[in-house]
Amino acid sequence: RLIEKVVELDADGVLISTIVTHSDVHKGHMQQLHRLAVERGLREELLLVSGGTQVSDQLARECGLDAGFGRGTRGQEVANFLVRKLRQRDSSR
Image: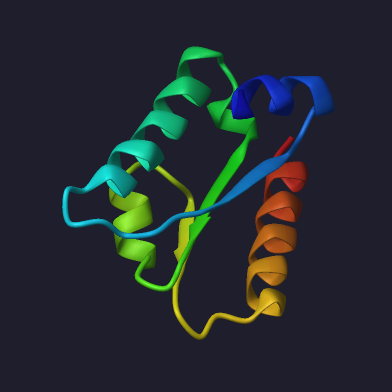
């Protein structure tokens, strides 16, 4: 449903919040989001970001996302990342 909403809104990015689980369900969700974006041909233009208290940038990137933000991250840091990446994307067109 999330990818359908991306298409409907012509979104530039998706930010998800996830809880790290012992059975690695969170990894599967992040990987699935990446995989679905690839399957729909959206991945090259779509920023995928995950956040949560135990999410790390490394973990998110290993799951195919562009970034991960964990405990102590301020909204301004996430917004700066998004703006910087969108500007880079637009300037390379």
